[in-house]
Image (cartoon, rainbow, N blue to C red; front, side, top):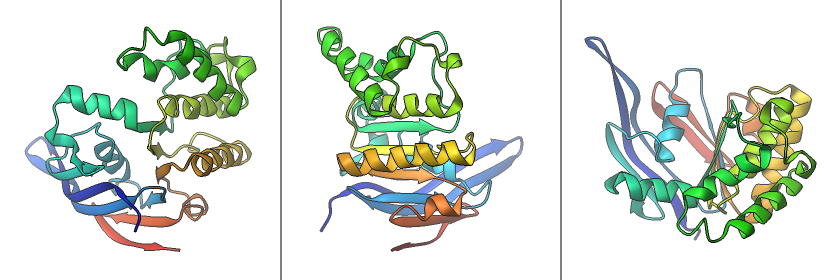
Length: 232
């Protein structure tokens, strides 16, 4: 039986809207085994991105638990949770979130700088950043700034950055949402190839049924609840 890498138990996330309370998640439970590729789908406003942020340790739930490798993510202190995010989880966002003042290589290197001993391993880390850029076909653009790259190239840089600290889990939020169909297909092929080649676990939010079909399982959210899930 595969190891359960990520587990959510009865997640609730509410936001105050003046005198009203908006319940975005209303009791979501799910589990993801190591090595799985899982899509989270549903209509706009179903709570997909909110769920992904909570699962990644970025946004504390109103109630409920997230377990990563059996450890309660939100029972940990902020420093410990930040260290877990940096070393165990890679993030790929729709809007890339590259820092414009840094070069491509510096953007890829950035997640490693928060790890203990990074200064002493600077040469090794820079070499790893270049290896990752080579892997996504952008080694020749290492000294460029993000605004000198196309959208597809920026997303490939973001993917390399997500892999910098050798995470076990990749969380991708609409990774092709800002790309045309041809460029999006190239990014998806690269993403799934890297996930398969490295034995990573992938959890991806998407509104695209064709993209979701490429994952091994689809979890559907409707009105803040899991509507259904099933393995292919």
